[in-house]
Length: 171
Image 1 (cartoon, rainbow, N blue to C red):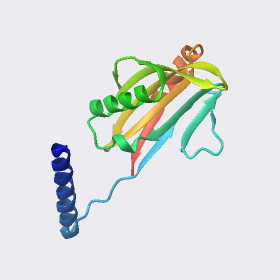
Image 2: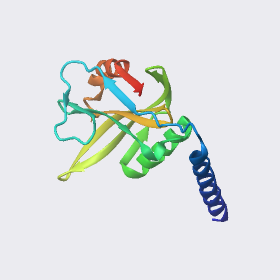
Image 3: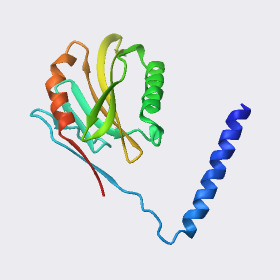
Image 4: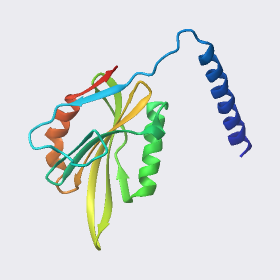
């Protein structure tokens, strides 16, 4: 508990210190805005009314990209470890593969594939997802694909094409 308090005070001090320095800086750094573009295979349609810029459906399958703000500014391995901890405590019968390294638009990424159960109206549905975590300018982008476990293998070609068609542009 004391270590947590000391860490919090150190972060608070560091934040105040860097905030003061930024005010004195004659050349303040402006934060880059991340724009993401995606090239989709046939059949994927945008989800109407989504709060996400990139959320699509194809049959029962889904695909989305969203910033995982709680994982920003972390080492990629640490971010994925934390994500797995949260997922395992959230879903019933959770199981996952070990993280697999890959590149998305030249950026290092880690991918996990996991299965879990959801209950809908008393019926248990087995689900499977692939989550790809990419750090771009210290922002953690989650690229997620999901479907019923029995249909997930059908997404393999689409997942490869979509990952190859994602571009990150800092403006």
